[in-house]
Length: 131
Image (cartoon, rainbow, N blue to C red; front, side, top):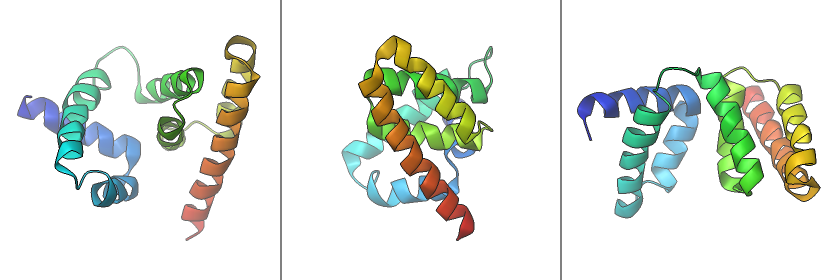
């Protein structure tokens, strides 16, 4: 792990996730030493290495993650990536349409679950904005 890539990863992660979610995760998920190792690796390899690559903007990368999570049934990750996608400028309508479009390719059960998670996540984001 290089310090440059870690710093780049921290910056990208903060831009994608935001201070609130980073703080919440630091207090719950990453207090455990095993998960701290995971968080460090993800910051370096995924955010610093993968998300920091040239060729695609962060907005496009968030949509790829939403589609991948839906296609593979990764529901906790979908919730995180939907938040990231909204922070990068995707609208609720655009994300809902992208999810609906997947129904012809990955099936209605996966898309139904994704739409339920999207509805829940969008409501949470709206409530947070009001608070």
